[in-house]
Image 1 (spheres, rainbow, N blue to C red):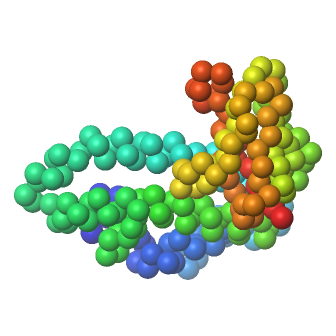
Image 2 (image 1 turned 90 degrees about the vertical axis):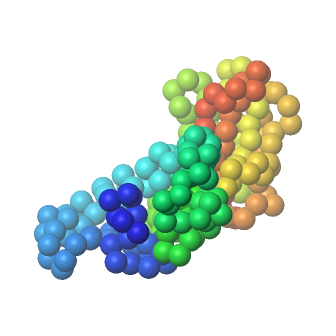
Length: 214
């Protein structure tokens, strides 16, 4: 695969790419001394882990990425189908959304696997948002984090709450509209999920990555 088109594998297999350590430094040994010195400093490394924790837990919207990927696929679908010079089949194009094709990682499956790996690695580093309540500054509160049997939400107006997994599937919903909806989580495996808040019209108004920990 021509790496100019976006497949940057760094001479690694797909399993290695999915499980790169949190503190991985690319390039030849000793080729990036500033990175290595920073990660060797306990204070700087802790700041790096905290920043990565915040990015992975709050900055990655897997649902939005899936929607965007599907919208882009729809745009190019016909061109891919009719392209007589492509170096892959139309079937592989469709499979590559969720499956690895040769050494090209599945677009969405790789994202899901990488986020799951980072989540587990960050938990081992102490990245648990163990605070009693999260407030976004607009009157919306979510607690407890991590959650066990239930996620509580409080808002200033009636809302509904839904819990999604990293594949974009709805796993649990609150019952109807309420200013204090709850989402049952006791039957879900421990891990990271996306809590989506919708207003009375059904429009998504907020979201929060939450950790379930039994």
